[in-house]
Image (tube, rainbow, N blue to C red):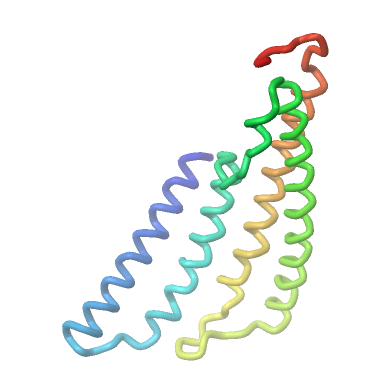
Length: 161
């Protein structure tokens, strides 16, 4: 799965970089702007943004403020705080997924098109819902793993104290 994300994200960022390079080259060097190029770059941009977020969720490398880890002495208590954080993350992710589902249904029903090339915007807008479903599933899996660790953690152990 790591390879799928790595290659997909690499392809998306390469497409964006080349597309922007081409747009700048045509507009400022050759003074001949390419109509519609900017609106096509919205599609890989949104997918890159959400798949990058999904990848950060998968790797558990999102930006966190683990200030409590400085004050907490035992590994078990740190794990308990992690489980509470995972619960809150899952609740927020599910809440955002619900909103994304509403937007997904709206985008499917309305079926808007881009202004110049008439490409259905649904293909870009669906990244919201798909990304949130995947992020919610990773949040649930980390909660499950940390709950299992917490339940099986030895009660008498004071490791890290």
